[in-house]
Length: 62
View (cartoon, rainbow, N blue to C red):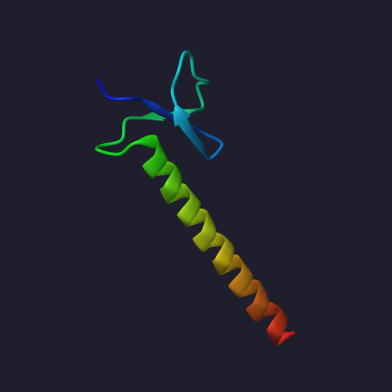
């Protein structure tokens, strides 16, 4: 049986027990929770870098 994961407020964890009705439940294919968390961290780092770059560009123009 595959593990079921829940995404709530941008956090992914293994679903245990009852889940809130606004939580997103999913079963990833061939991936585990550590892989999903690694992808989330890298996406967060890319977003942060993009924000910093755009802020630097905006302050450079002013």
